[in-house]
Image 1 (cartoon, rainbow, N blue to C red):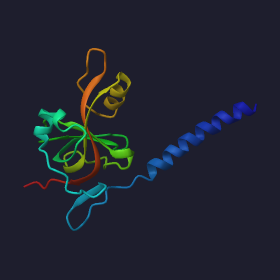
Image 2 (cartoon, helix red, strand yellow; image 1 turned 45 degrees about the horizontal axis):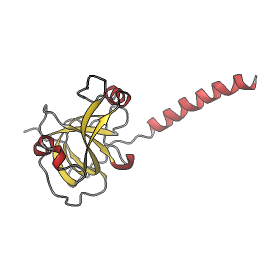
Image 3 (spheres, rainbow, N blue to C red; image 1 turned 60 degrees about the vertical axis):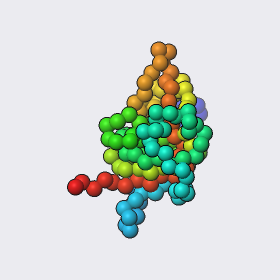
Image 4 (tube, helix red, strand yellow; image 1 turned 30 degrees about the vertical axis):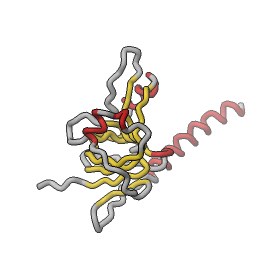
Length: 166
């Protein structure tokens, strides 16, 4: 009888916790002075690399700390725990994650201009990882076995700004 009572309580507790966590999400804090949303560490002036060059020769920048600029093409639809940035809207880009899962971007960041500092990595995603990311909205090119090679960027800090229509 006790086992029967514990299961519904665990389910109820899990559902309640998920609701509390979701209800505590806060909208992006936009600094009124410059309209910039800042996440993670302040940008420290790392060497700038054009995103076009980085994507053409990712091995030249692997494990180096660099700064990049681009536009947010998409982001994690669940928490904002990753974003895909491209040199220009509609172009191919790379997925950006955040060091130590330490910060997230706003869920409505698609289309924003972005500056980021961090480290370039080239890795192979397992089939399960690729499935997970695609389930959150990522675009990946799969290998025959379901894995995916990926150029990624582990950001220590980002700045996002809405583009003003002219």
